[in-house]
Length: 118
Image 1 (cartoon, rainbow, N blue to C red):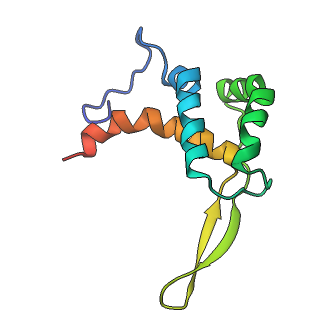
Image 2 (cartoon, rainbow, N blue to C red; image 1 turned 180 degrees about the vertical axis):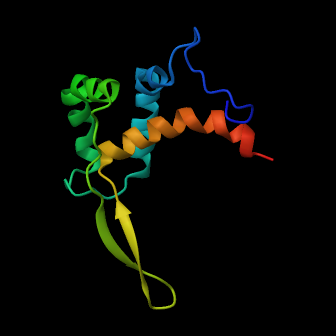
């Protein structure tokens, strides 16, 4: 799209947001986040609580994505040690934000990977 300067996305194809919001894509994103089993963010929710949260707040989350009102939470900042004795900052998003990030990445990567693969 960007390589040839095309910016019109109003064709007959479903919009990208619909692919991002699709149950199959969100389920795949959830499974990826669950598989990685990372630490919780500022809300302290871990992956064990993610599924019940997503089931309870599904419609609210989908509506916020559709309306463009979804706002990620701040990241939790931690310092992790490096081999040289120093520390580096690490930002840990909430598990819900990671699902959304993964859902977006899952749709954008196939589009842009072709342009950058060489």
